[in-house]
Length: 511
Ligand SMILES: Nc1ncnc2c1ncn2[C@@H]1O[C@H](COP(=O)(O)OP(=O)(O)OP(=O)(O)O)[C@@H](O)[C@H]1O
Ligand SMILES: [Mg+2]
Image (cartoon, rainbow, N blue to C red; front, side, top):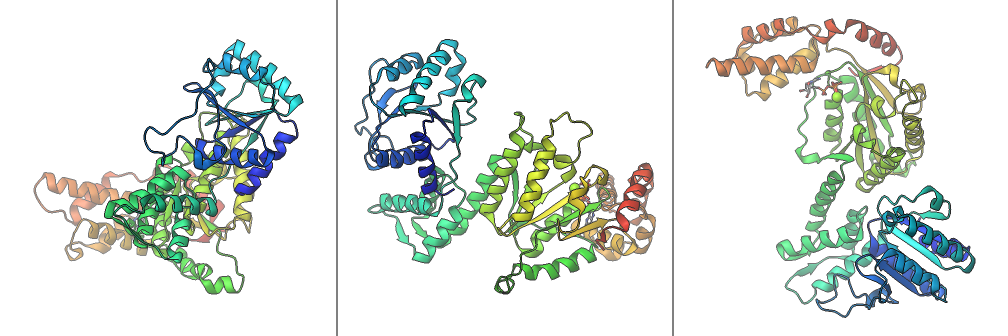
């Protein structure tokens, strides 16, 4: 919903006798702008209340705001009505007011825990449902008591769109004029800047743009990349997604030839030519396989090969403490990812977040999340390539494995001799070892049945030993470590056999 639609929606709610509108956001400034626009159309006054200030009449237009970043210190502020800071006093006051108005109560929900306040609130609400006055409650995580929630309607305000962002940028630029900052933005730069800012709140936008301008005294095309970086960091801080920038991604994957071939082929789907022929961009792949065989590493490699930013969705963090929040978290994660498109969204161990839970203990939460995910995967319009990985096939809902969900499903088995050779070389090289000193064919032979992770671990422990004993690592030392390790392929033979039997004939081999 665009900002204009939100305004329209808000007006409709007010005139159709909705006495309580809840707007969940931390961006009070946008609530303000929205209400100012709507109320000036409807010719209704706005009153705002906070426990700190009490009740006061809001300024009519955003330009005569008394409390924004551009107001000089000491600017004249509104006058609160006397004795309205206490919730109960404020409610009584607005009940007695004889004209229609919008009453914006900031962070009000917690006060409804008080029985007297809650009762008074209900009485005001009953009255308002007859006379078209409306209470707006804003805040984050607004939870109303059940008996009150039936009178309330929730209004979702989306993140600012291009127009609002452009407006915010212009304001910052204007505020910088006259300072020593050089402004060197072409119209194309402004366009790219606004695109880079997509997904930020207005206050984040202002901070980011001001910082970019002030830290080196110019605002120019160069800053856009920096802003993208900062955006990625902001995404990181929200805690739902981990971000791996393409430049620092040094993943090196041995083997996986089949997957690598497929990737080279699918890459054309992201080109302008593909758009010209109305070909859809690739949707994503699922990598199923044995633990420690490089599934996660493969996800990183794809991002590296395609030179795209990689966003990792942390399944555990989706499950917020509030039941019902996890699908909201997922939606939020998707929105964030969309602001980074084109990018890769990596859902590691997908069975953990969207798998079939053995009981209904989570109230069908993972099912709902899964349903939402499937719809999104089917309909997503942005260039987001999904890489999902899974260990446990039995926990994956069969719908996810049907043709057409993912572009391809790959199965990763234990590495064969060629792959083990590759993996050994990668990890010896990483420890700055000349390969000539090692008997690679022997190492390949003794690591039969070992996963990539186990091979890497043996090389690491051998080097630790060598350092400790003050000598250099060699083939014998590595073999010793290998002999000491009982690989998963032995301890979990049945699991692995089962996975193989299920996966081998159904999915494409990753090699
Ligand atoms: N094919 C490979 N090439 C190079 N290194 C590998 C390969 N397979 C595994 N490794 C090494 O093992 C480590 C663990 O691999 P990774 O985390 O990708 O496995 P996974 O399949 O995701 O395992 P899990 O199921 O436990 O998540 C990697 O960081 C890498 O160092
Ligand atoms: Mg993994």
